[in-house]
Image 1 (cartoon, rainbow, N blue to C red):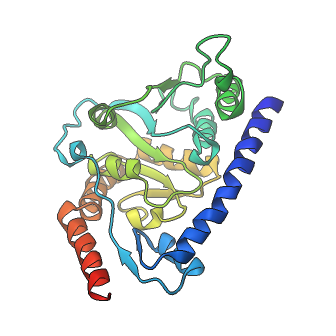
Image 2: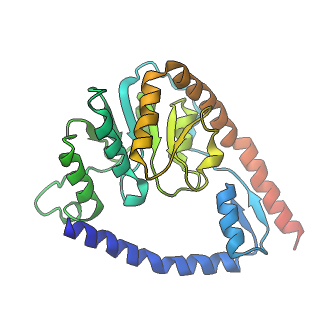
Image 3: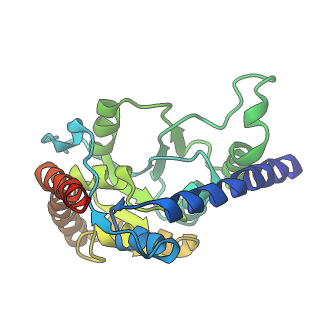
Length: 268
């Protein structure tokens, strides 16, 4: 545990100097493109002179296709990243611990590389956040409830999501995460931490369920609701997809992007 803590602190101190350069870049910007009120608020706080242009994110092509959701795995959860602490995988593991007795078949699938060392020389997985996750999984006796998929292709990700009961976005900070949009596009009911710009991706209780980002008990309760309330589940699936189709409309995004560049060019 000591080595894990030292590794995470090392990453923190290596990351911190980058903030200075990012702030300087935003200060020097003549125009800013963004996607949410959250990034608009923070860019304005640093540079209140630069015009701001809104343009949502266009997702990968596979997620605009119609996918059948006829083989959904009961009591399955999916998260798209567990590479570092801010992605919040540890909170989902804590929530899983709270639910495993009432839902014996519950299973968590995590996209990305496994934290299990491949060999005795696999040092990176023996320290830092991967080691912390592994310790947490073993502590709660969840080895048989968690699967790491490895790196997924675009179509593999879409296929995995269509078979998933619930998608969880547990990050402690995000702007408008693509993976959340992709899950919603496929009609997968989603639960997300209420953080950053995510609030603009869906309406609480109608298109998505929110919880406080560092509160696994709250997350566990929201998961329980979707496992037991079929009416709420179907509503989130249908209305979440409809919202995602608007959020990530390719034609609207192209129009917004071109209008922004036209405005910038005309102002010269």
